[in-house]
Length: 89
Image (cartoon, rainbow, N blue to C red; front, side, top):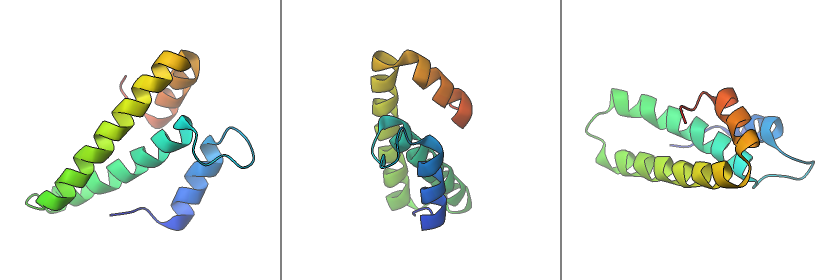
């Protein structure tokens, strides 16, 4: 499950640091959050889809690692991003 190209482009443009930014932690966390929401909805419809479940868990773990990094390096930016995306930590 992937998100649409237009959606991903919009997410990147909303969270980028500068004009050509597409790989900063803020952008990666925002894109992963959108993919996680999409996969969560898929898993609610198809609870026995174990292959997608594994992908969902990988995305959640990746986002958690990036979040930990951002909290350590730039706590104020992470707090703003978490509030914007609705993350709990």
